Amino acid sequence: MEYKDYYKLLGVERSASEAEIKAAYRKRAKQYHPDRNTEAGAEDKFKDLSEAYEVLRDPEKRAAYDQLGANWKSGQQFRPPPGWEGGADFGSMGGDFSDFFQTLFGGGFADMGGAGFGGRGGRPQKGADQQAELTVSLQDAFAGSERVLRLSGGNGDKQVKVRIPAGIRDGQKIRLSGQGSTGPAGSGNLILTIRIAGSTQFKLDGGDVRSTVSVTPWQAAEGAKVPVQTLGGTINLSIPAGARSGQVLRLRGRGLPAHGGQAAGDQHVELRIVTPPIETDEDRAAYAAFAEHFADFKPAA
Picture 1 (spheres, rainbow, N blue to C red):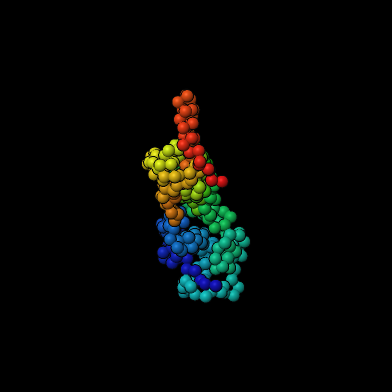
Picture 2 (picture 1 turned 135 degrees about the horizontal axis):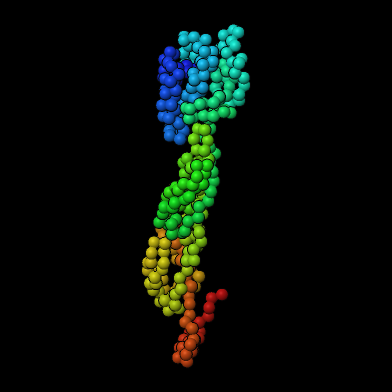
């Protein structure tokens, strides 16, 4: 087991006053607090600082720790001296302190007082993450948008802005740091699962969208350009000559934009050949002439 130099961890002299110890802890704890510092090792550093403050803020624990003397250095292999009684009066309070702390004092956190980084019952813990769903329109998922959520908590209601990134897929998540439950070591996160609402014009299929367009028999036979609605606006779609009803044409990159490592989606347009209605004798005569002209035509099975 390694010896921990609590004075060195807090950056104070062994003769430091209670006020100096408290000030040093607050300064360093803010620097390495998990809500403020996401660098590797920051959370472990914060835990070490909290452990050091737990000992040095308490006159009895500090006095017991000082009995070990000033000649120990951090990282040295440590065994309590024969007859060590330092932890006898502190009891076992649970928690997950280092082996060094538990050997000396029995483990656990006491009340951290006004320091603002702790509580009873173990090492300071962040509040729990919370889960929720947020439904957005397909157009918002395509172009991106900003939403304002009203969150209710112990301190009353508050409004939080949420940025919906362009190209987000159904089921993907957005993490709102610090907007979850509140705990002694900070608040957890709010994890929003995005749900994309249905559309009357488009059917969503991952990053792709599917739609239909109506064409006349002569447009399908001869080929034509027809207007088609996409998520980004109306474009002219080239219908190839001899197109068939149910044929699907692909518009590359006209689905949801690239996002989160996923490529841009496509739009798949299904052709639906629509015949004009018969409303007059002239209409009926036109169909009769058409049928006579193509009397030898046999539809494919």
